[in-house]
Length: 386
Ligand code: HEM
Image (cartoon, rainbow, N blue to C red; front, side, top):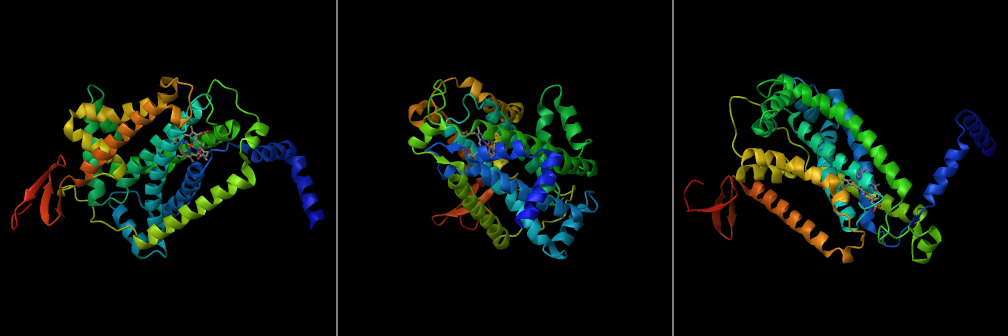
């Protein structure tokens, strides 16, 4: 067996000159991981694996999905009720999208708290922010594909907003939806962006992000103007080699998140909604949870301010390493940076919460409340319609 292996290795090496590549890989895997690296540093690997699963389930869904307004909803019904395990693939893909956006936000918070965005990792951070924007793009375009009432009307509402941008707004809206109304052309555009454009960009950016992460190694908690400690010093400080110590942690976290994905998909499979009806507007239409803060903000401020807020927020995130010039990485020495982020986080969660409650009725401590479009509660008297 070993002779066969040696011959095979020689055959491949003569053709691809693998020697230097394998040496570089081995050296890379032996890299030291700083002592503060804990379970929060497995979020990036979980994300990478979930994204691969997402691409896999997406390709399987494409086999049956039909991207025309006349056939899309029926193809989803066929997939969910007739294709063997079709419902499971759909559920894995839907739950995968929620987990990926959730984990990407947690990963961003972890990098922020540990100052991992600072010099020399500005580009790692910037590719991360662009990845997050792509993930939101996947969510936005994917939401319409089942062509059901919620999907159709949420897209109608959300795509109306950019029209308020002065000068370019109406043109942007028409370009986005392929005409004056959300219709067959919109579905075609969203589908191509969802299955071709975004995956290509995602693969390229993810490759760049991971390459930068491996080249630069995980950041230490030292100041950015101090030299990076060499591997021996890191070992003395309590650091470990990536293989096997951190790799095992990564693998355990990956198994756990895959287990969670399967459990969620089995317990709460994706439902098939009512087919889209452009003549009948349902009440309480809402986008996915990660768009709720932006959606709710639109209700309180002039539309143009609300529409520009999300892209400006992403731009500020992109430029963060260049705006925050302090050399400190250690969270204990950056109290103001942490407080500012906590305030932004609370504001976004609050807006999201109001968006979630808006246009619903709930019974709290025996009293029924109707939450209006702004999310403010109004008590409903017994017997009164909310
Ligand atoms: C969407 C897919 C993403 C994947 C697959 C991914 C993957 C990874 C991995 C595997 C690591 C190393 C381990 C770890 O820190 O968890 C990492 C580190 C890093 N990521 Fe991401 N990431 C993604 C998104 C993001 C986002 C949204 C940001 C921030 C906006 C970001 C910024 C960074 C930075 C700056 C580092 C280096 C941190 C350090 O050295 O301390 N990443 N990423």
